[in-house]
Every structure is written in C-alpha cells, then in structure tokens.
Image (cartoon, rainbow, N blue to C red; front, side, top):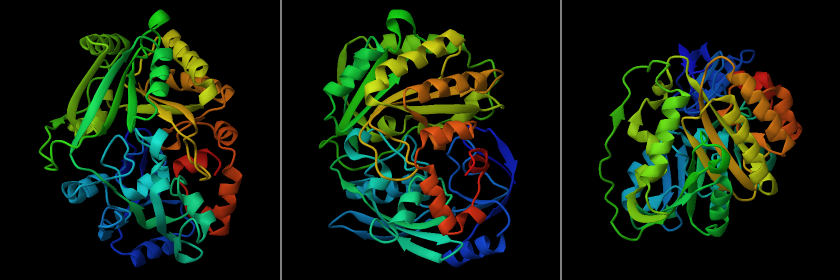
Length: 434
C-alpha cells in the first residue's frame, strides 16, 4: 500500500497491519523483529515520521474506555481522535485541554508528537495533561507507565515519535466548558515587533495565535493579525453542523505561486478595517479552520508540500524571526500559510519541541531549490538557539537534529533499554540517526 504524510512527500510502499486488540499489536511486533516498524494513526504528521516498510495502523483501536465525570479524567485507546472526543463530550460540557490545528489527529499521535495548541503559553503541551500510558514494547510486553512508574519510558514516549513502542491507551483530563462558542478578539499588527508585543500584553488570554503575512517586507515585515480567544459562557452546548468544502483533485502547480499568495495576503490583511474587533465565533473555525476544507493538501499539487515549523527562545525571537522572514523575502518564495504562536516553558520530555519563546509554521510548495532554502533557515534557527518540529519535518539533517535536541542521547538509552531500537524505525528516525 502506498503511504505518505499529510504533505504528500515522501511516499513509500508499506505493508499495513490493522490490529483489533492489544494481543494483535504484540503479535505484529514479535512477528517482525528484524523489519523496520512504526505505528500510524490518521496520517496527519506532515513528513515521514509515520512511514516505514511495515506500519501498524491504530484505526481500529478507537475505544472510549472510561470517564470520571467529577474530575474529567478520560481513558481511551490510542486510535481515538479529537473529532471522536468532541463528538462524545462536547455536548456534555467537556473540551480537550490542548488541541492541535486539526481534530483529525489520534490521541496516540498527539502523545507521540507532544502536540501543542493555541494555549501553550498557559496550558503547556498535550502530554502535560496525560497521567498514564499503556505501551506495547518488544522487551517487556505491555507496560503501564506514568511520571511515577517507569518515568523514563513515559518521558521518552511523550514526544518520542512512536520510537519506544506502540501506544495503546492513555488517561488524560478534559476541561469543563459552558458553550461551543469562543469569544474572539482580533488585533491588527503593522509589524512583527508589534505582533510580539501584543502576545506579551495579552499573555493572560486563554488562547492566542497570529496569522502572519510572510510575503510582506520592509517596514511591513511580519505584519500580522493576532487572534485572542476564550471559551464563552453564552450560546449553549449544541454543536451544530459545519459547512465542509472539498478539494476534489490535485490542483495544477501554478495555482499557488508568490503572486497569488501575495495577493491573498494583502486582501486578507486589508479586509480587516479596524485595529480591534470582537465577536463570538463557533469553536470549529477558531480551532480547526482548515478542517472545513477536506483534502486541502491537494491545493499544493501532486508534488505536495512541506511545513517548516521552528521555535526560537524568547530572548532571540524578534531578531531571529526577522532574519528568517528577510531571508524568505529575498528568496522570492512565499508561504501560503504562516502561523505564529507564543510558547510557555518547556517540559521534561526528551524530544519535546516547545521551548519558551515563539514558534512560526510555514507551508511551502515542493519545488526545485526549496530544500536549499530550508537548509539556510536551519542554520539561522540553530544560530538563535532554536529547533524544528519533528512532526512537520520531512528533510532535516541528522546534524541539525542532534545539535538542536540536546537530550537525544538520553532518549536513545531508553530506546535501547526497551529493545525499541531493534524494531521501531521510521524513515525519519533513520534519516536523523535514531
């Protein structure tokens, strides 16, 4: 079966297993001791982190197992998606503590990627809310771990890109809400510096994110639209139906180019007439705007795209982001989507991506010369003490990875201790020397 990540690059022909039980998972692991194997959820990691010659799909490990109404603690199988959780618990007044930009991500994938959302500055990463895991390992069978029990396996699995074993179950807390609506405040920023100042001024906002015009330059470099949000107490808990558009086929490669992207960015920024606007908005367009367009990755054409997401420490954010944006402007390329967020303090997981500072995610259509530009951006990110997000990566070098993730050797010790280095490999892990 041909597989790819969400960016449609690279692709691989893989044998895919669909276990129904924990015992089936262990059987898949033990029957393939010499073959590279990786778990895969809904395939929304962008690059090659869920690609291997042999893949264990968690599609049918999708059970809600228990829920404590008094505390909000939910235990579920790894194949349960955020969409499943919202469908079951939103009408009852519960919401995920941290959510990514799409609801079509499994809990196993969220843990393996240690995902973050628009509230990292307040709530941290998703795994900061996970209290317990069950993992299928090659050495010890099914292991239950937490911060107190097998803590090294817990820390390596959270953010470990599926390289310690197959996540089977997780327990984490949902948070109570009173409405499906978000009270949103939108602020226009004329420059990157103004956008970062707005993040600092509104650091107590429960959610914050900015759309950034990376095709702007000069005095308008980094002009942005900053969006703040909090769960409303008005509007009730009836989910409602959202309108979904469909991209039926791969678009011609010329549709997204620097001219069309520049025109769209200018239109989007200038449509907002006021410096500040407030409105009540349904949670779906606030958290999951692109989920309203099925197969939106087809907009980039048959060759696909890559998302380049990096984080810079707080003290270097303004200078480092400015340098990156100036280099992109000089390249005459433009990102079709640029999303800026503020991060709070990092956690203790070995390969977790966030650090206190700012992260910028950029989407680039794959074409000749792109990887050379991204290599240059890697050097800038390294110079300013940052790193690139593994879940979005499709081309980072082993040197770049090892210089920017200082605890990778501790991670490798855990892999070896549980025999995972003999079995669990992805195209990404092999490329990065893991």
